[in-house]
Amino acid sequence: MSLNDLPPWLMPLWQRAFRQGARLPHAILLAGAPGSGKRLFAEKLAQSLLCDTPDAQGFACDACGSCNWFGAANHPDMHRMVPASEEATDEEADTETDSGKKEKKKSDQIRIEQMRDMQALLEIGGHQGGRRVVLIDPAEAMNPPAANALLKSLEEPPIDAVFLLVSHAPRRLLPTIHSRCQVWDFPVPEPAVATQWLKARGATDAEAALGFASGLPLAALTFVEGPLADARQRFARDMLALPKTDPLKLAGQWESWLKAKDADKTGLSMTLLVSWLQRWLSDGARLATGGDANEKARFFRDFAPQLATLSKGRGESWIACYNELLAYRRVAQHPLNARLFLEDVLLRVARGTGSKAV
Ligand SMILES: [Zn+2]
Image (tube, helix red, strand yellow):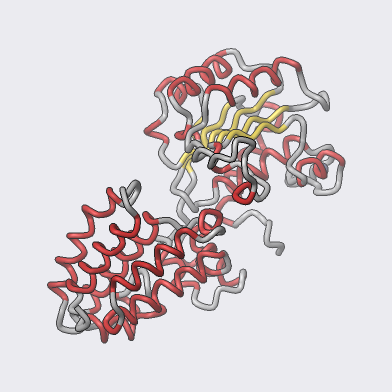
């Protein structure tokens, strides 16, 4: 089994695509929770549609000229549309622009200019004389003008073009886009299936990773082997040390952590840290009432014994602190001052969880 194999719970959807063959709809909306495997599936399907010699199950051969282009992310008939902020860049953080000014923060939206470029290319026709694939990921990132422009392509689709729309939040899409796509719902696999799949990928505590990712195995994988695995460990260690640490000092350390050059690429963000804090508090509150630590800790199973010691007898104040943090989660997306925000949050957490240092 290779790392790139399609997970078993996605095989029924794959077979559905394969059975349709040439009758594959020209627009498919791949809908489901983040981490259920939509993106991987969409990439595999796109590669397969462009491959010269797919295998008996419909998977791309990984060897033909088309697959080589695809692998190098420069297939002329593959149009990937992602927010500018997610586009691959070459060490741009180090490069100063001509004017010497700091570059503007890249957009989180898919914009009409991108849509128009794609449409112009589609009009020219395919390079290979075969299918063309447009992958829009995530589809809800299209701003209204971009979505309206796409609508035109979906109404009069160019011949041989297949539109794959990946969406974590399909309800946020225009109903008119929805209605022009065939919707494929991506399932959350049974825990046993997901755990087995993670173990085959070397997860030592697959249950903990799965719990942390709310049962979504591809999301869990990023906490097993991805860069976020280290981040999560560091977070938990910092939280365990919080009773003996100055929260203001920790706020400074976390600020540097978030500002580090690779933080964006690893997916570390203020929003993520605040959501981890909430999970930490939620687990702690549940553990405070005693019982089976493995069952009570939903997100930090691997730290359950230490966490239980920390929150013992303090369940109510941990819950109160958890509730307080709900309000912070909204601000975390755009805090006016990251340092002050972190200081405020960590002081509250330190007080709320009964840290002796405050
Ligand atoms: Zn191929």
